[in-house]
Image 1 (cartoon, rainbow, N blue to C red):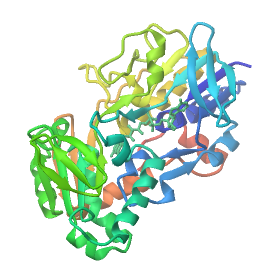
Image 2 (cartoon, rainbow, N blue to C red; image 1 turned 180 degrees about the vertical axis):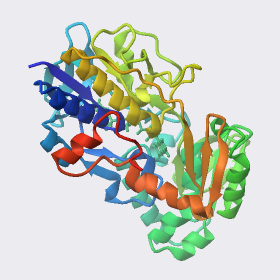
Image 3 (cartoon, rainbow, N blue to C red; image 1 turned 90 degrees about the vertical axis):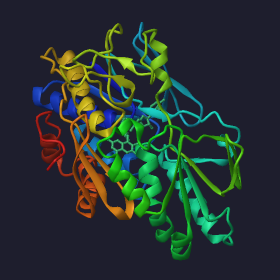
Image 4 (cartoon, rainbow, N blue to C red; image 1 turned 60 degrees about the vertical axis):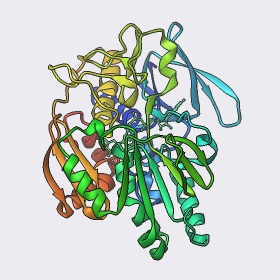
Length: 402
Ligand SMILES: Cc1cc2nc3c(=O)[nH]c(=O)nc-3n(C[C@H](O)[C@H](O)[C@H](O)COP(=O)(O)OP(=O)(O)OC[C@H]3O[C@@H](n4cnc5c(N)ncnc54)[C@H](O)[C@@H]3O)c2cc1C
């Protein structure tokens, strides 16, 4: 039987597997689909700035069993594109070579380490489910300790999408831990090295973000860089030492390092070049989707962002095209010209923008409900029996499923 192997069980990898399984069933042709990932659940990464809940994980089993998708629970540690093999390493250290006829690479991105002394030892991040759980445990310990200037100060490094959401939501984390006094008295400091907040979000939502940060009691330090992180302080480049027991880094996503093994030129974020069918340019038999693919979204040449919004449709197209390639059917061109942003702004609400220039469509409390619907429903995998799943995995089914 032909082998389709998918590396990565995030938004792109999961949807690639689901859509490929549907295409094989509709064509009534045998196709072995194996997803290689270390975890047996999807981590809903866009939610990791929220107060911690096990609901950040959505298990694969209710999807994979009815659709006949296999999982190899392991890390891919190498790909030999010449012999078409993925080298997988299991948790016990043992290894196995997995042959493929077509491969979808969807191992996502990782937060690049911040090159600041003490960052690895003393800072938190929100990159993975485990990191979000560590942050939750850390906040519980800090709020249980006697209140001091250090335990009451929370420094968020990086004034981009995640940093803004986290800074605005921090008091809610403390309230969720029952620490109402700590939530009221917290000093929340958002540090951004650029001269504006949310530099990559553009001017569209900036005034709203600034208003929300003021509303949420977030102290904004622009044009500032941290040069040292300790357990109980951060030091800024100008020499100021700020006592703080919590430093959270939200900067710098890079594509998974597996992209470096193909000998093709990568973009500045380490992403693989793909064609309009999401096939990796210069690497026969390999497709890429999600945070590690440099994919054109429209005819004007705009390129996808590292976002769930792009990872899901790319995963669908990569799975569809890899399966169709094996089944001798026509591929589908990936295009996604529409773009919206919905940014959580804590107790202020949220802001919704549309278009690549990010014009504000709506802001405030009334958008908060939409953000919650996106986070708790729209970006979760489909549910139901085999028939319902097959309908949801039709590449033409509406997504988000409104
Ligand atoms: C805190 C936070 C907030 C965000 N907010 C938003 C938002 O509001 N809107 C939005 O659109 N996007 C948001 N994003 C970005 C979004 O989460 C990513 O763009 C999206 O998860 C990318 O999907 P992906 O499938 O490419 O990668 P991922 O979701 O990162 O999945 C990659 C998968 O590959 C697996 N993997 C890693 N290494 C290996 C290996 N060696 N072998 C096998 N498997 C491997 C991982 O375990 C994971 O399951 C946010 C991200 C974070 C961290």
